[in-house]
Image (cartoon, rainbow, N blue to C red):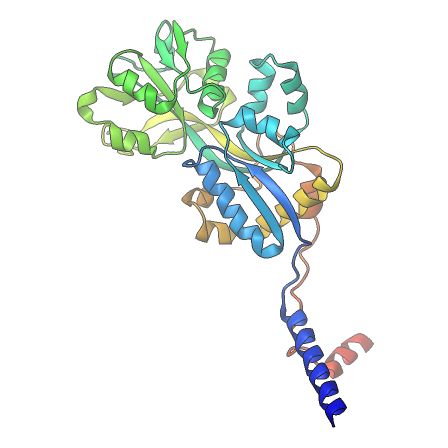
Amino acid sequence: MKKVLVRLVLIIALIFMWGVAVNTPLQAQDFSMGIVTGGPTGTYYQFGLNLKQLVQTMGIDLKVANSKGSVENVYAVYKRPKTQLGIVQSDVLAFVAQVQTDPVLKRIAKKIKMVFPLYNEEIHLLGRGDMEGFDDLAGRKVAIGKEGSGTYLTTKLLFEVSEIRPAEMVPLGTEEALVALKAGQIDAMFYVAGFPVKLFSENIVVEDGLKLIPILHKSIIDFYPQAEIPANTYDFQPNAVKTAAVKAVLVSFNFRNANCENVGQFAKHLANNIEWLRANGHSKWQSVELYYPLKGWEQYDCVKKYLSEPVPPPKKSIKELNPVLEAIKEML
């Protein structure tokens, strides 16, 4: 009797385990990855946390790291252990090609590949009331962002492309730059970020005599996509302001090893669950177009491989299985 009971318990356990296995969605093979983002209060970092939350249910342990900006992230996806992904500004490759002189960085940049384009970041040019356009920066003292930051990278490239020469380019972080601008120590400042920028919303009033300056220089508009900061985005800004924008881009390095397959699986999960990210992640996911044709960037072939594969149909649960019906289908 005892042996019969033991056998019965084993049979029930096996049936239960089989049922659980059939009802559980297929998950990716467990593996770890890393993504390098930006400052801990920035959108890049929040995107990283959203992605971590998404893929952890699929067997992928994604480590999210902070950084000082796009240039550091280019190095990180190449050199930092277990860091296959990074978020950079879309003009980082142009910056390396036209401005940066480091030969090592130039070699690395040639093998940086796009996983997906993400969202637009508008170029905010804030200056004193007597300035009407980008060309007025000639001969002025301008804050260009902290060295290595995305704002620094874009601003250097803007001056390179336009051939406008300020009197001095001051490498100040955005908060320091705003203080210096209010004090009259500089004439203008740049800040590359998706509107509305919290720093401007909370720290500028009409009485400060500052305004957003349009960026309409032909060489810049030919190089960057046009954008507009809508009227009344900020209390001191009654009218819409034309400007340029850069895209945030999710990138990887063109390694030919297991990282290739891991990045491909990761990309497939992201693409298949973009609606979840739009519903549960940072508000900027609403404007993400995964298949936007981004000039100057080539999508990683490991990503293309996984996106071209058809999504397998969901596994049928044990309750849905009808052996008679399945046998007839097989015969037909």
